[in-house]
Image (cartoon, rainbow, N blue to C red; front, side, top):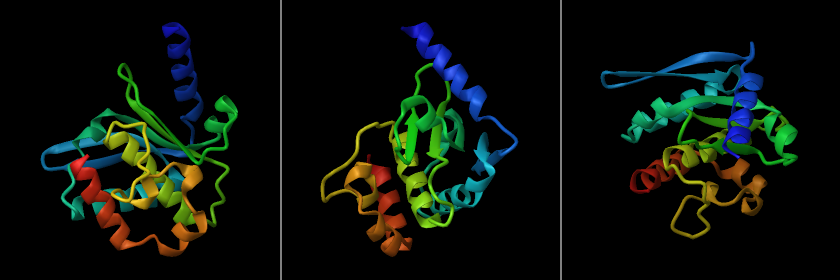
Length: 168
């Protein structure tokens, strides 16, 4: 079982690393963190870390991140059409996948998916939050009204997101 898991991880990592990826650097205090990001996701990842800093959220856990990739790995290996997938590992660096099938013209949706997956990563939590006490985007994907999110996602939602992340 462990060997199969290792093989799957190695296969996923080797498939996702491509010319569409760059090394992304984040600096917090005296620490520098470097991980891979697919080029189309760079502006969204920039936005995420800008808001993390603005909301005084520590990003030191990013040292455990291998990369954020826009890829077809999700549908290819799992058969799922999920918008995002965060693989949290005890033995390897964690990986965030964003489904390549998401239309690029829905940039707000892609941003929300990236924020949603970063929640799983930073909170080290695979569960979703389906109560009124958490940000709407942290619900299970099948419960999120995509049109509503596209219309309403903004600065207040990002502030609420980071405030929630700080306490969880």
